[in-house]
Structure formats: structure tokens, C-alpha cells
Picture 1 (cartoon, rainbow, N blue to C red):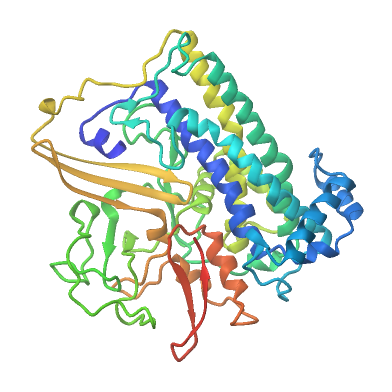
Picture 2: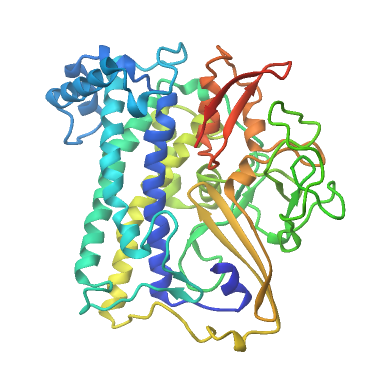
Length: 498
């Protein structure tokens, strides 16, 4: 939407901006909590060890770090019984595939039991709070109510089929529920788990360059710089300077990707000129081995100013921190203080995981702010959600081009469009996992995933939980598998990262 709105110089109504902020905001909160508990926590939490826990001690631990209501001895006893039933039946369900008993696990049994309990609670919590997304976007995660020029969500206080006082009040209740769980469960758990794994502040650094397009606009202008989460680039871990983002500096290589450019694979292309459908004439991709000297990935290699960039919560929080975002500075400094680590710890697997928690907390705090903004507009009689003044293609210029920036939960998402004779002539997008999972470029520069794994100690190559910790800290979004090979190119194991 933003790319087309930029191409056609469309300014959306205020209510549309707020609704978009709310859809993105609740998606951040739900997605990050799901990631922590259901996609990443089991890299640090030994589920089977929880069977050895003393529920009374678990209760004491939980009450020491939070006043969350589910913290009694009886509550944790029931969770332990449920877990024991899973184990004894041999049907571990969501806990089936992991390296239980691995020597890299360090949490005591009581902390493991607490984490298991909150894992299960988060399953119920997330399906409730995401109803905000359903009310405004119809479907999660791909909202169905976006339109060029605004939103297709009608506002009418007197209609049951539109946003009204009842649905807005419901959203306020859900926003408060979201914030409470983040404050009293997610953040305390994150700090508790991280305190046992401080050595992971030394691993997983990556490329040291960070790109954030910024998100949650404060005004309605296309590609505005007036953003709640600021836009910027950090180079070489230097937090003393945030560079402005120039989309013209974004290029994509296919040197080591299973694509070909007509002009040759060593020359990068800007997304406006990008190709993804040019037939690759080389040999069939060799899934049985990895040859990093040749083509070895379906991902292109995007670069900013010819440098690999990490995107995602860590990039956003670092840019905000370095840009002087007061609330984010407060929370990051508090987290660093509680963990007794310095700012350098942010550039790591541990820092990446902590940054996601910080972002979840500050975003959860903003949900009620945006809902209140919507309420104030409605009180003033402003029900507009769409600008249809340029909806008629006959009013468009013969040729137009535009770009749109969005920060998805996993990072910087850019769209570029060329319009000719009122039709799309070319369209390209560069998505977060393409930035983070990119192969090497024509200069041999590694992407963030590859760089972050360099120097990671692996105790058991057959159970490479350490690799999972770093890769999962990026929250990869790809429906493929990670393949681990030995020095001779023979497969060792495969780990699903969906």
C-alpha cells in the first residue's frame, strides 16, 4: 500500500494511520511472545528437567520476580502433572523435538517448570489478544482490510457491523491484557532465563551493521520521517551516529543465489530494476551438499551502501536507543542493569533476544495510546478511513514509481513499484529474512546469519543446540530446513526452523 501511495502521492486519513499502527502493534506483541515461548525458549529451557522441580520452590521463584496471579504451589503442581502425563505417554506433543538433557542447558528444574507453565499460558493468551488484529484486519497475519488510500474498516458508532463503542471498548480490554502479560510474565521470564546464560553476550554478534526503516507514523504523509520508532542505519556497532536511510543505496546481488541477472551476477541491482523471474540456466540446486564458492541459496543478497545489514527488533531498538528515544533508552538501560552487563552485550545472541522483549514491552504500552487517539477522533465526529480522490486510475500519471517502507515483526520490509499506463510494470520486495539470511555477495561478504555463527562453540555436532540459539534469535521466517554438514560435506542432522 505504501509503495503505491508514494507513487501516486496519496495522503491517508488520520484514522487509517491509527488503525494501521494498531494492527502492526498488536502483531508485534503477539508475534514476539509466541517467538519467545514457542519458537525460542526451548533452546534454553529443558522441559524434561521440570519433572524434577519442587513446585513449592517454583512458586517462591515465580513470586520473587513477579506478582502474576498464577504462581501458587498448587498451580505449578498441576502443570508438572500435566507434563508428566505427556512424558509417560511417550507423546510429548509440542515438546517432542528437542535435545532434552543436553549439557548446554543451565536452568535449575524450578526455573524450567516455571517456563513450561508460562509456555502453556502463552498459548491461550495469544489467541485472545490477537482479536484486536481480527477486529481491524479481519485475518492474521495477513490483514485483509488495507486499501490504497487508507483502510476498509468503517467507523460508525451506531452500526454493529462497523467499529463502534463496543468493539473499541473490547480492544481496550484486550490491549490491557496484552500489556499485563508482557509486564508480569514475559519480561520477568526473559530476565530470569538470560541471567543463567550471560556468556551468550559473547556469541552471535553478526555483521555489526543495522538497518531500520522505522514504523508507527505520527502523521499521515507517505514515507514520513515522523515515526514513533525512528528510521536509521548504524554502521560497525557505532551507536554515536545514526545515518539516514536512502533507499537508492539498497542493491541486491545474486552472485551466490540460484538466479541470474542478464547483465551478469557480479553486478547488483536496485529493487526498482530487480529481477526474480529470469530463468536460472545452471545445474539443479545441489541440495545434497553446500558449495559456498558457487550458488547455494534461494535468497538474494541485499546490501545497503554495499554492506550487509541486520534487520529486526535488535536493529530497531539500537537505532531508537542511539536516536535518543527516551522510553526505549530507559527500558534498555534497566535490562542491562538487571543483567549486570554493559551496552556491548546488545551485539549478541543474548542482546538480540533481549531487544525483542524490550520492543514488546514498549509497543504493548502504546496500544492503549493509539486506541485513545482513535476514540478522540471519533468524539470529534471524524469517521474518515479512506481517501478515494485518486482511486480512479484515469487520474494517474502515465508513468509513476514509488517505494514503501514497513517494519514487520522480523524486520525491515521494503516494496518498490513501477506503474506504467495504469498497470504495474515491475514490482519487487526485499523482506526481513532475505536481509538476515542472505548468502555471500560478489565481494564475499557474509550475511548476518552466517556471520553470527562464526566462533560459536558447539559441544555436540549431532545436537547443535548452540546453532539453534543464534539462528532462532533472529526469528527466521522460512519454510525450509537448516542443514548441518561435516567438513566432507556429509549431512549431520536437519533442524526444522519453521
